[in-house]
Length: 117
Image (cartoon, rainbow, N blue to C red; front, side, top):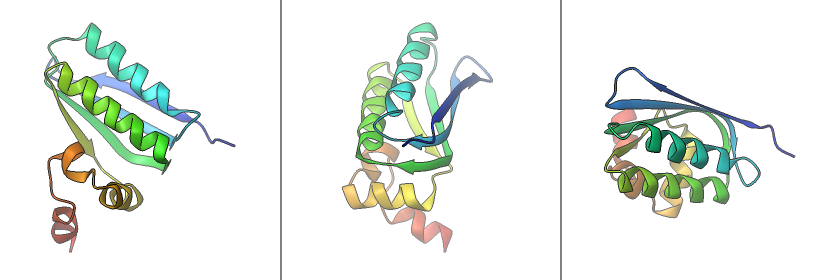
């Protein structure tokens, strides 16, 4: 059973978009994030940075991770950069365990741990 997912795209300027993700990023909901990002990137070709605010991601399973990888592909394919802001410790652990931290964030898996200590 899913708790649902809400994704909201806002742009304070034409170069930067922020996507607030609230809820569970999992099999039944994850396609909502990918659809939102791909649709908005098509509508806003000047966006250079897409900042996913992950602070309220309650849960992320393998389907959610797969979707983050697809979002990364869509964003970089559009010539933009993806940022995963306000990651929860659980999301950081998932990225570290799967070896996707550097790919999705551009930082080493343990760099955030050193910064936070």
